[in-house]
Image (cartoon, rainbow over all chains, first blue to last red):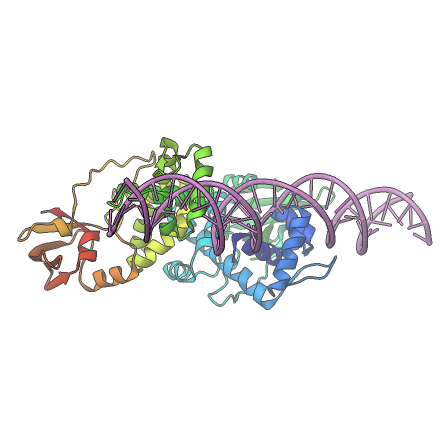
Length: 218
Length: 218
DNA sequence: ATTAATTTTTAAGCTTACTTAAATTTTAAA
DNA sequence: TTTAAAATTTAAGTAAGCTTAAAAATTAAT
């Protein structure tokens, strides 16, 4: 299958999993940077290939076959992230960008070799779970968005759910990374901001950030 | 630039470097597995982009810009070969196949990281030279085809110039690999075959093989 | 040197993956 | 509930990268 198809099913899969939950063509189009008609077109084609269910004006839904394809691409993406992160001194954003390209040109054999080399990791450097070779995710996600985290409690960073360069630069500067510990020191519910203590620093995070940082209670 | 374009200029570059020296559209087409008209078409397009010189019925010649592009792809291909060879237990043929895909989806930054990790190697596992980040090959090739090697003398394997699976399987079975030592024990000039001593074995190689194994005198 | 074979080019056409503009349907608002 | 806004779909068109069939030029052979 082509890169365009792989990215299309991946976008639906990711949308479905995340909070947004909107898998109508327009939203997929926005994420892929293509026009609305292009997404509708593609949706019809993929429906004919039994990769998704398409009904006019309705949200797109992956079939089992489509989900399998998405998970295969997601697996390769996350394995590359984990591998590049371990091997080279590159920012999370750079790693994401490289993985975005490499994921489509990676044989199952190479993916397996990478997984083996890493000791079959269950999570990538963002905290996203890595599907196994059968496309199954065997871990269970107990994390909550930092926006929902209770004041005064201590948490472990579970996921940094973004691919934005600015965000990662901010994280790198402030010790915000996968598996680090933080305490929610104060919440400003009016302004929807959250003050956290992490390492030696105290930082105030705005709403955007508290919605893409996921944490597990300590 | 697209994968098709990168592969096109790479094929011209490789043809030019190797013994064949035929860079007419038909020959490039054969190597890329596309039709003759497709190659002529592409040649015209790339001429308009100043990547090569095109004259009707003549051999295609890369411009400096085209050569630079080819060398950039070749660099990434050979770095991936070296890297995958070092990291994973994969056959030379498998490594070649993976590199053939990854080479087009690798940023200059990642290529540099790989090169750095490997200690900026000058050769890949086939013995092919790796261009530096400026697209320059700083090593000088002194190797000759095994077919031309003198009887009785001892040589070092300099290059295995092929991407054929059978060939690599044969090599793996017979200790024929980059930098190993062999002695030309007998030449059958009529049948154009060559008997070599390598490791504990004595092997008779046919013409096809003696033309793609390159050696340096010891 | 002429003919035959091969190669290259031209021509026409296809698929994929897009685009913009206009029509339709849905959703949200007054 | 009617209307306005937003989203989706249809329609028409484009560029890249191919294809096969036929015409033209080159190369090889007699």
